[in-house]
Image (cartoon, rainbow, N blue to C red):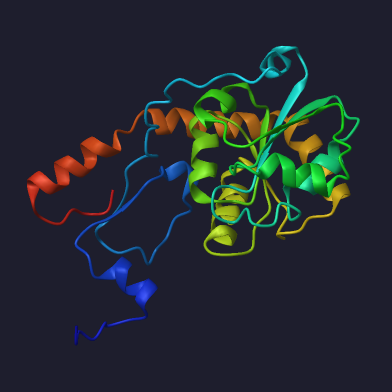
Length: 242
């Protein structure tokens, strides 16, 4: 359109607008002295209606007193489930945990079975799409490649995290998981099985991770992002940093 941006594209979209509204809370965002004046944390976006979800036959296993570990690579970077989903299954095979592999793709369970040589461990439950609003309240930890939406969903339920991601914004999200004390960052997209097992054991055994995740959950509950957006639009002028 013939418009010259005053800065690199991914900097300009932060500095040009009157308002930059981030869907998170201060407990998950380390202080930034260089944040633009219109920057504001307005809370995690609330879930949409969960709708009717036919519970799989193994759903009762999630309330049988065992640890519940959910592993996912989200809905975008899940073309290679051998990065995180399959290693997590192998790492926790034979443990006291029920491992739910939420592949977020209809052929995901078949791909995982093929990767495992059709030998799915007894403690593993494979799924395509499972609404997190149903699943995360039953989880003790979410193992994820640090997608922002999945991390915010976990924290909205007070679930601590093990994160492993290297692409897009994932290293920055993972850095905030570490800073906020809500989980462990493995600092790679392809973690070793031993590292995964140690991280899951640490996050589920050290109370501080759950406590910090619950603190973030409580702060999220105090925010109404839709109301914040409506208030800013109706006021029609820039805000100071909040």
